[in-house]
Amino acid sequence: MRISVIGCGYLGAVHAAAMTKLGHDVVGVDVDAAKVAALSAGRAPFYEPGLTELLTETLASGQLRFTTDIAEIKGARVHFVCVGTPQKRGEFAADLTYVDAAFAGALPHLSDGDVLVGKSTVPVGTAERLAVNLQGSGATLAWNPEFLREGLAVQDTLHPNRLVYGVPSGVPGARAKVVLNEVFAAPLAEGVPLVVTDYATAELVKVAANSFLATKISFINAMAELCEATGADVTGLAEAIGYDERIGRKFLNAGLGFGGGCLPKDIRAFMARAGELGVDQALSFLREVDSINMRRRVRMVDLAREVCNGSIVGRRIAVLGAAFKPDSDDVRDSPALSVAAQMQLQGAHVVVTDPQAIENARLKWPDLTFAKTAEEAATGADVVLLATEWAEYRELDPIRLAAVVREKRILDGRNVLDPEAWRVAGWTYRALGRR
Ligand code: UGA
Image (cartoon, rainbow, N blue to C red; front, side):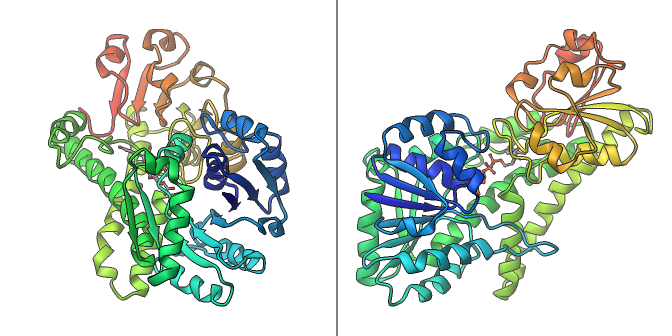
């Protein structure tokens, strides 16, 4: 099937390459000429494990190309809209400028029978509004939310854990479903569950899922606050409650909390939309979820102050990790970077390292000092903070690191180190929610 993908960021670039891998003929469109040039040359414009290999393979097949010219979507039967919906400046609501521009740009090039598929995360009600603009074009709108995780994007796109189609009622909806089933024939053949529903439900599925995940993380972080007040241990607590299948152990890792380009802005946009719909009370708990999450960052700076006997002014602090999570170079709303910047603003000399995200971090916080390796960052440090749980930081040797620091103080911002091993090596070990 001929497919176009409009918007080639974290979502669209992976989607375009994955659709080619599934056997389709794909054109990816983006307004950013540098991004299009990089993708056309087989270079991923961001770090995502497996993407370079997938791009190389699919470009070589001759069935994938990238362009800045939206007119080249003509001839494709299915058009995926994958542009971003960031948080508006100074507001909780989502900024739909890029979605509206993508739809306006695509409209003149649609043909009778085409299916335009929204994948961007949008406030509920957006699809219905956009569908009105398609009337008379002969094309049908479907909404197909995306659940991929950064760092696992290739695998999640090729083998999603579920597919959701929001389609209109009647014949157009039935036709859109048939076309989408053809697009996703391979994952469907693997037995991936499919939910076919209306636009509003499809839009809500996405934000409801991210809200649930954010709530689960803030729940365990709230328990961490209780643990700190009582001398209990949040990792033991998470393990023990996680054995209950109804609760489950996943997404119960206490620490610096959630960040990234999705969870934080999605829960805020959801609250804003609920307000517009007159049901803000239904989501007032998300405000608390957000507050608990942001408190973790403040608490971590306090903890650094605590281990430095009351002041971080002039102290050298090594921050291991800048990305919002491991296996990504994404620093959008990164808890690691936010804590690093706060400590720097409060007078510490902060040295940040990350296996992939230094360039992005430097663009955002040029005043921070950056080091290539954990050892380099930790050299002469008064405190070492593990802020993003990259595998290489989880496996750090406390004895080797002890040789380069000034003071053996380790803050485990993600609760991934073995406290005993570090204490035995002479370190003061502190973490959020642990004795
Ligand atoms: C999230 C969702 O997991 C995806 O399903 C969704 O498609 C995506 O948002 C999106 O809306 O596009 P992602 O932002 O890649 O994916 O990252 P997650 O793995 O969800 O992690 C989010 C944040 O929560 C990270 O900062 C991570 O460190 C933190 N986290 C995660 C915790 O603090 N504790 C945990 O137990 C799990």
